[in-house]
Image (cartoon, rainbow, N blue to C red; front, top):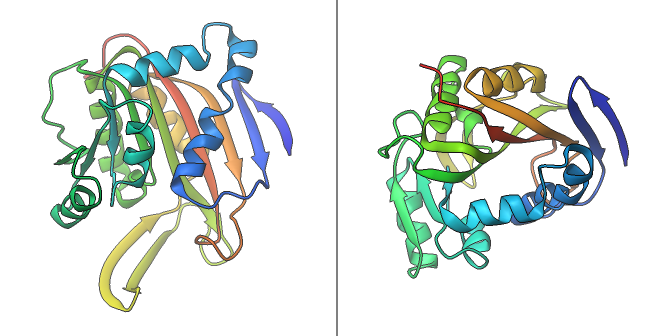
Length: 228
């Protein structure tokens, strides 16, 4: 594993095998002790206490990441745009709370949440929609709250900045678009919305386990009042 700095962000290029979205989450959050050494004010206890209060998983899908977080912090709630995904998540974990909602218009008061996890949910948004989603996440997070964001960067088939269109998935006809994103562009949008990016992690895909794309994870902290 190699590390170097780009601007104020620590970049980790990792070839570690990551089998599921849950392990992807663990990969990033496991670096908090190192963040604490680098910035002093950030550590495992800071994020742990934040998640313990009010955490939301945006684009929760079938609820696997929500279940992993809720096992440690029961107040975690999953939110997804798709009614079908929400129904599936509720079926698999009826004891947890899953809600239908859009990242573009979150039905919650300003500063209501202390942490947001959004793994691969922004890849389905246009540039304008992604900017709106970043502003909504900033609006709903209290100052000092945390955002963990993940997205695809590139692959052998799709270059950074291109859109991957899928018409057939698991034997079913679909209409799905996934935007492969330049990390610096996403960082710019996140910071413009009112965050400070504390850590950036990049890794190669795990062979035969997931779509073969390079991925990026951003760990960001909410600054002052959200920008209008």
